[in-house]
Length: 310
View 1 (cartoon, rainbow, N blue to C red):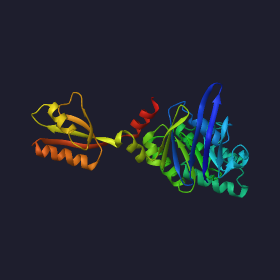
View 2: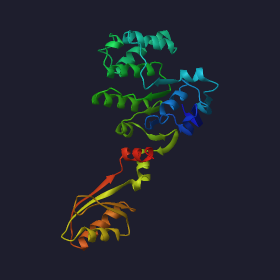
View 3: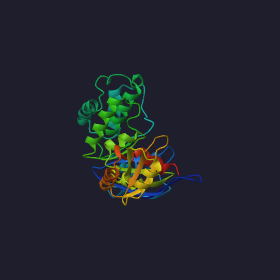
View 4: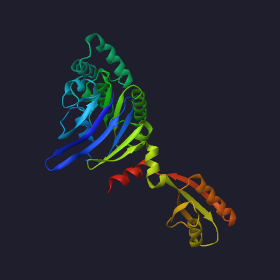
């Protein structure tokens, strides 16, 4: 089931929390939705889930506008908000049964769904405890279970791995990737390596506007040429000679000497592997000893910082 966001805007007073953004999410796609605090992520997700109304624009779920079909759309969406709302005095199974009833799960299917969610979310040892007795990580698992209890076609997950330990994060990552084969998923998180490991596509929002949209690989290629080559040369000549010789190469676009490191440079090139070959041949020609030549890819963290600090 696809999601179409068209010129979506949300205004609070004089401030635009979301400023005329448009994007699509295809069935079976996991979209990583990134941005700094206050960028408009949670507002966008709340509008998609019909939790709040937009000021203008439209959200269409499988072609149906949220302005006209909010009740039907809600049935197709599982939502885990950033602040996981749980009834702390209820036992886990009782709470999930209650949510299943609210979501219209047929009575003869409730027990089957409860068993499946308990196993999927690793709640077997905690299922009879009150939610208020659980750790933050297990409460987050209960939140995931309630979002999936009615087997929705779309999942909107806002910081789903908050409070989980590394092993739990790996388990939830596997679960989300498995769910993404059959469902449309929007995942918001501040854990950027998690996005690269889980998501098919990344969308970055800043100050209410979309500033990047693509795969992690395509975003890297767009950012600063996709990375640089760290070059370390052992030679008696001074750094100025090495610097000018590297800059004279046709495939080299930029050379940055590394401060406080003799004869170490960060080299940006236009031809990828050919740039590395040219650097190697330069060292052979001048009988310089090449101690290191390492391709350093631009990290998603660097791309995120570049796009959201302006």
